[in-house]
Image (cartoon, rainbow, N blue to C red; front, side):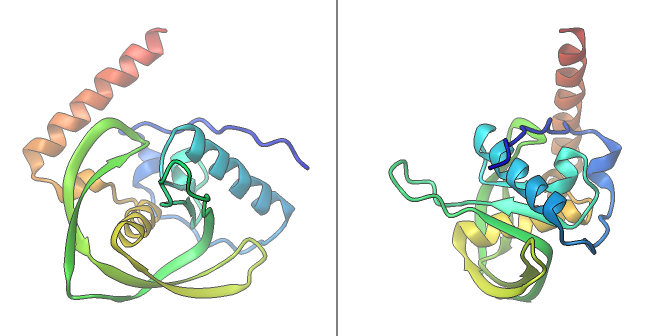
Length: 176
């Protein structure tokens, strides 16, 4: 078994977080290894989702696991080239956070349920409906693939405040 590598997570503002990601076209061992590294990085952070651009790969791939019970079985998922094919009219509000915007949380309203089609690391197609937290998480991560952050849903003043906090955090980290 290949050793997994923790990837450094980009902190907002970083121009790579605002890029629209390219589709994955090569399904090889390299992609599978990168997906494993992303899962390891997400669990270590700790988070419930991580998109490839957050670790510097501008490709349409995300990992997530919303099975959060301490004694629950992990349910890691890797979605390559994910696409929402249906959204419920019913909405949900969750307090969202982001590994690229550490320590900042805000309520975001999204469709309560979504149907998503994607490929796995071998290129095999899948389709599934997600509900509640899983639906919020998959939408949040797919947003990353389109260069959208959860703070983009907030009012400009709140968004600017969070961005300034992140700039300060990055300056402090750079001094260490």
